[in-house]
Length: 103
Image (cartoon, rainbow, N blue to C red; front, side, top):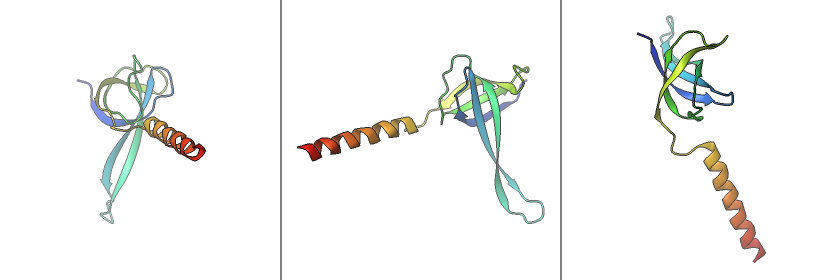
């Protein structure tokens, strides 16, 4: 059975490829302090359906390219607001302010 990993999509700029960032906590062996470690995996996304910020499950597969060793299984959750949505909202606010200043 292939191992599965849960993470957040940090990039989808390549065609049929996503970069998934997986955060984990570790404890320093001497100082016993917790710290976060992030690992990035490149995964194959056949339909280009995953977007930045989505929480996804990826599983191991045969090597698909020099860096891709995982395949997208499913998208668990999509964020409520994306950076694209925020930019649209900001642009709408500036248009209403400009219209208010002109009248």
